Length: 378
Ligand SMILES: [Zn+2]
Image (cartoon, rainbow, N blue to C red; front, side, top):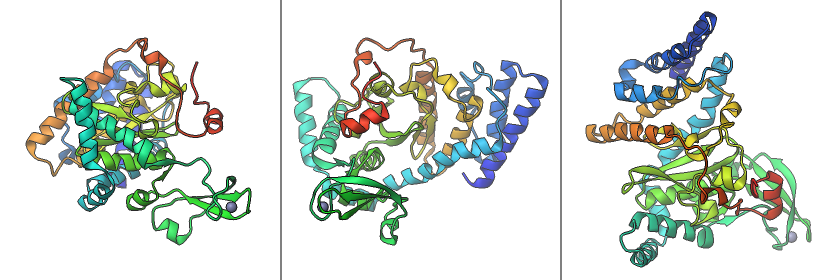
């Protein structure tokens, strides 16, 4: 979706909201604004089916807008998502997947998954494979970095701040570089926050950004349909599509094999106050917050944009990436849209007993987790 389309979408939407605010909107009118806004973006190109539109509308009429939002609010919201929409296309790159295959122990992971499956007859092979991948990634492959060890002597370091990346660091997608000084030899160690996947397959270290980025590539390389999940309160993880269960499954590489299909980990386990959780795949971009939160207060924390705008806007962007697909796959995706919406709209009043005993955050040093308040909500 280009800047012009976004401008049109948001301006049209803002105009409608202002008009209906002037009339004093009923909830039904608020809901009416949504499909026209989606259709306002080059309707001949977007072509939302009526089923998709009604899916986009379901659940919208319950929440009236908190205030009148401006085009700038919508633009700012989309800015957080659009670069990732481009980024996830990178996971489809065959050369990149070949590079990943050089470092992923594919045969061993398959053998491990088979062993796990034999121990539980009738269970889902893909689930065991994902758990094996999560185990390997956390325990054997990627390294968590709070403060990097000194490049010269390996001693511990203290943080000095953040600086601009050097040209060589920028070349591999670093937007910023953290600077550390050694407590023993005073040498300076640079920690560039790389985005480039080839570089990250080599450095194999970082925090959740680097972890989720590389793990998404690993999942795609291993044949899973994959989404990159952005939590606006500063975390990222992965979702993979389960063919057996026909639904998207939460996976967090930072937390290892236990973090498979435990979406309430952050709210119930870490004590996070979530706001927006957006899943970004090559064919769909979805507000999946309801999968990750059962807190009724979450709606008061969502103050960035009009609730009624989110789903049609994200759907319009996603539709752009479906043009080249076969009719049958497009139909399947439309069915999945509806199924997922139904899953997300399902009422989940309170976490079950198992869900409310999810652990606090495991990744990162205790001090760092403490400072973020993510060691547990209880
Ligand atoms: Zn040193």
